[in-house]
Amino acid sequence: MNDPAEAARLATVLAGTQPQLAGALYDRARRAARSDKDGALVLGDSASWRGDSEPTALLLGAAARLGRSADVPALTRAVLERRTGSSWGGPVATAAAVQALRTLAAREGTPALRQVTVRLGSFQQTLTVSAPTRLLIPAAKVQPGALSVQSSAPLAYAWELRVRRSGNAPQSLSPLKIERQYDKVTVNRDGIVTVTLTLKTPVRLTHLRVTDPLPGGLEAVDDRPFDEPAWVNAAGSGDAVWADRSLYDDRAVFYLEQVRPGTTTIKYRLRALASGQYRAPAPRVDFVSGAAPAEGAEQQVTVQGGQ
Image (cartoon, rainbow, N blue to C red; front, side, top):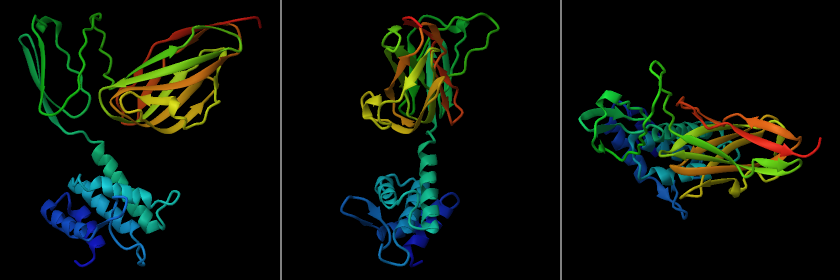
């Protein structure tokens, strides 16, 4: 097969059933690729009738399917650099680019399986996990002794002791905790309250919707640029990616493309409109993946001043 782009296309198709043949085809296409001055990996000639967007996207799709992680960053950079608006210079190239990026996103979003052994006193259990998992240790088996967690791969975990009435089912495990803080809980009418939403997670998460119900008598203030960096701060990285932000009469909604492990804060402001005592329902985080939602706590705000 003389066409490197077609070799990359066939490598993608055969990656699941004939990985050795697919790997050989990928290597053939990879040898035809070149690195540009910015370090991006490009397949094809931009001056030819076919261009280089489609061949590069085909090579990225093959790299993602075959797990050639060393080539993925440079190929991804090349594909993204060739996007014009919402397309890649034509329907064929656009279809190839979208398919490659979807394949890459699916691969990155699939956590690896790992064996985890938990020991507490005389209790021991081994689990195979690939997503946030809850392990309940019966109270009768909790005996003195140090908690030990051994994993076949890097693992983040948290433990807690819960007391509940018999017959009540435990809550679903959420991979994230959300906390809300007002900089003041008593404010004069027409005053400003800064809201800080804190997201804490030990793992990388994607596609989140954060809903913060507003207390009655206050309205959200949309007086800063949408992409103002101060609105979001991931501790340790200073980085988070927005998809959208919407402010309504009764709630503020934030959509996040990704949240890195650690602590991420979202800030926005409220203006007090009418005096009184108002209750804000608990903030909530929902996940596109279907993971159990996270909820914070209710809070109360008092607005002082005449009507």
